[in-house]
Length: 349
Ligand SMILES: C[S@@+](CC[C@H](N)C(=O)[O-])C[C@H]1O[C@@H](n2cnc3c(N)ncnc32)[C@H](O)[C@@H]1O
Ligand code: SF4
Image (tube, rainbow, N blue to C red; front, top):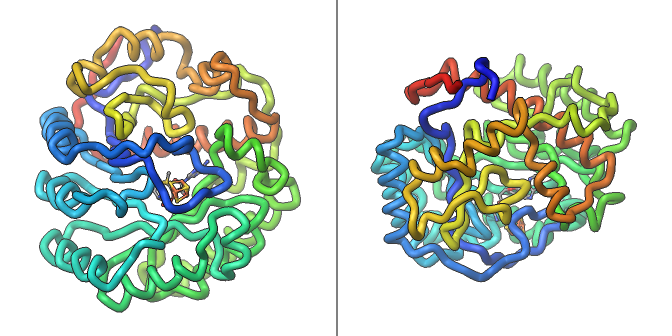
């Protein structure tokens, strides 16, 4: 490995997929195929304890659909009680007044919690349903949470199907909702089946730049509006199709634990396991030969290379999207490494 590569003594983020089942069938879902497995809450607690010891500072609770987990509230509360910056991502369709009330009680108890992140791809149900389904139900779920006073943010996966309608989401919900995360599409075996509906064209990229400008203007007008766009304007629409240019920080800042306790380095490839918490600790996995070898394979290596070896094919455009997304992730990683974390940096040789 190069002397210049800095390896954190712990990942910054732990993604915990507490189950592997869902009531939706989104066209891009990286969590599929579902195993219908559910992580035991005792296992979740054990992993969270280990994460705390390692000084991991952010935990994302996801799935599958985490709200279908019978112990979801207990796991969420335990995560918050340990002082993690916790994020719970839900498709919003299972929301009931009873659940919203429980979320409100949690939010009141843990004031640092930014609340529930609900996934929606468009305000117009027919557009949302091109990629996700149950759009009417999602909107009811959002209103149910808002009526109860639960803080929420929205997560929007940007694709060819919704790119023209992104600003309408902010128009509909701001200022009731102030945080919007526009997420770049990650290529998965599922998304490649629908590539023509999902992948961004050059024209889409121009639309995106325009929206970006409009939202920037809106942010100057309105208080507290937080929008994370999927990439910097400057990053697109150039085409970078050389495998060598696909860089990645898998193994450097994030660790993913699947509901069956296997461990992965990247959401794009949750099925490529680099450890198993049934008989390893989180620290053992982080310091394992497998991860050292992964880190040693390039500067830094992209999981796509591994995925390609596992016979998964991606279209050229998907590779381009990944390249741009990962470039941004690396920037964020560097920023968060130096600004936010109390995790100690160690330099590997
Ligand atoms: C796997 S889902 C699990 C949580 C919940 N079921 C949901 O959809 O919100 C976590 C997040 O990943 C997003 N997601 C799923 N597949 C994706 C992909 N291929 N590219 C980008 N984001 C994706 C979802 O929209 C959601 O915001
Ligand atoms: S709701 Fe979430 S877990 Fe379910 S299919 Fe959609 S992205 Fe996947």
